[in-house]
Length: 276
Ligand SMILES: NC(=O)c1ccc[n+]([C@@H]2O[C@H](COP(=O)([O-])OP(=O)(O)OC[C@H]3O[C@@H](n4cnc5c(N)ncnc54)[C@H](OP(=O)(O)O)[C@@H]3O)[C@@H](O)[C@H]2O)c1
Image (cartoon, rainbow, N blue to C red; front, side, top):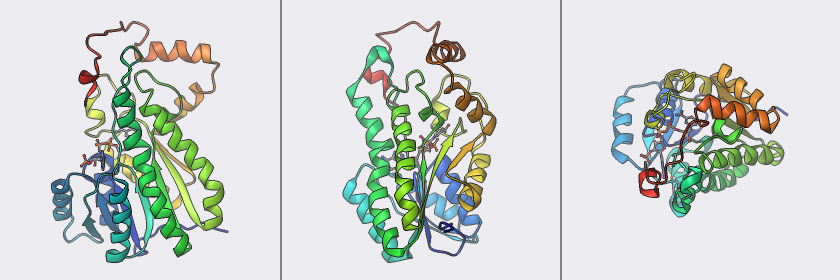
């Protein structure tokens, strides 16, 4: 059986994290291409500005402010989208954030925040959306993870673990979702130019403009397979790295990131300094 695939004019696309970065550009691009998009995020003004920018475009944009960590709020968002705009055919769980978790300053609060947004923030929307899609007999879901989920990277022991969990969760769910005609995909971006990556103080290899990244995502939703990943040259290298014996992997990665010469700095890595 061919699994369901989104096309313009068929129901609603719901995008979380639509106020900035990848989610904003994705909402913009899909509305320009004729889709009906509901965009969620906490920043209501930014969503409303996007709506104004999109006035007169081929498709329609509706904003629905919501915090992905609010379980009841996410259930209510799903209910109100289906009541006001029709069935959700594609849900893109894109909202995310990064709190660094260096080994010398382990901070439970930073771990919790990463998990609340990047893992439970996905589940809080996924569970009610799947209930609806089961009822409709079709649907498509895209979980935005990251290449940081492929292997353990310095200072990303919480963020990377969440993204690894999202990848594993999507693989596991695919076995049952296929039988329900719900296509599940995972998006693993490398470094993309957004406000989030703009906080990085190191040089980001293969940094990709956000419009190019979003172009890959939309084509991936319409034609692609289980994993949508870009820029390909970078993600291919990372996939090769994860196949290396651990000893070689740690040696190479410490040098590639400069972590082999980085000194532990207990003063500068207090939890308060980690706040972004
Ligand atoms: N940029 C990269 O290089 C890169 C690489 C790999 C993966 N990713 C992933 O791609 C996704 C998008 O990242 P980005 O770079 O576009 O980040 P961004 O520019 O910081 O945008 C993040 C979006 O998520 C929303 N968000 C954050 N916390 C939220 C919450 N609690 N509830 C609802 N919305 C929330 C933000 O909106 P509000 O603040 O208005 O709520 C914003 O719209 C994330 O999952 C990120 O992990 C990014």
